Image 1 (cartoon, one colour):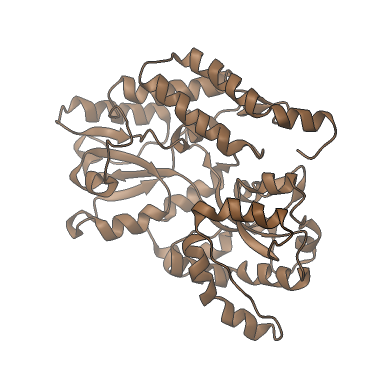
Image 2: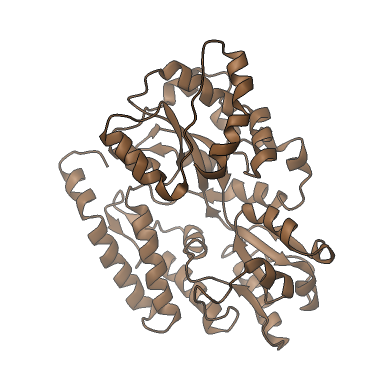
Length: 390
């Protein structure tokens, strides 16, 4: 999908040379159409041998019995070693105790921040805990500089709130993903922390139009902190002026009591149950999983590799902005492994926005989220009660 679908073709000649008789055909799909096209291919018995699949999509295709479990192949492989992968990323590919994908590249969220602005507020290092972070945000606000906030939390992004929630002990869903668990103390704590950013004026009242160009606003100092993913390393390097290139840095997300968890995202390589040549498909998955090939893939795309050994040499090992991602990837957690998760995540975004705007209290919001989630999961409960696939 997307840029990866273009770049992977540059990696395939070496594979085909080392595997005579195998020729790989690549079909590139835009992300906006990929989900529908894959479901259509499944319904029409025309799935490819293997594909790149967003790891939050894996539970849905497992429920359709569309994917091959890969445990036996991984156990017999001399190339793929699960112990070399970041644990939280590897876990996103396990559903009901079985492995259905091999991580291809990883994504997570952490802090991008302006070191110079933080220093002006009296701090020489980024925060490690919520209390340290709120102290910094309060100090930035107390400076009273017009059109300057501690951080920005765009209303169309659910990831920051979900990351805060994953830092809690309480799961987001309960009873094997049958019901919402948003009235739990953990999620309520995360929601209150998130909403307090707006209540105290640390973040601007957020609408989708507030930050039209995040790179320009970051450059002009509209905000000090921004929660984002690895693609913005390259964007800030390209878009910020030369005189600001030493003024920004990345840092792991702070947690309630210390360094916190974040979202385990990214894409994996999966094999379809109806694959015509499973042996060749697995050989390609192994090839694309080699640390040296993953380093080359990073050089071409900027995508971060899921294997620790792929971080030990080359440009990635020397990238000072990527180091925080290496640290954060040791503390990532999978979102709930249910096919309905993306619909639930959208409800989290919508309900949280109503709390920020004062339309709901936090207690009302968590009750509303549980009610909406329970309706979304109604079919899942029905299937599980009858012994169907989750």
